[in-house]
Length: 127
Image (cartoon, rainbow, N blue to C red; front, side, top):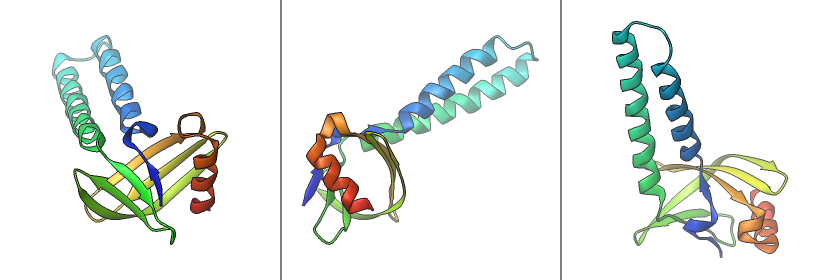
């Protein structure tokens, strides 16, 4: 069983939070009516709140892959079966989207963090 601990992957929701914060800062300086600015800012802050909630939920997740290439996520003692919806192999990185009926998780796994051996095992199990 291949196990990837919660501090060995990067949650892609963090990129969304950074993008939404940048947009909200730009909207403040854009010359439009104040009511439109407030509506856009409210929409962006709701998006940031949603992404932060997902980040906090995903903090304690451990990803496991068994010998039969079945993927599982474990959170607070609960085991949930997931499937790989999409993946993208990049030099020294793997972008993975895991989805189940209850959860969806999009992550980046870096070769330098998990090590070359685990990275090769993971790449072989995905392909």
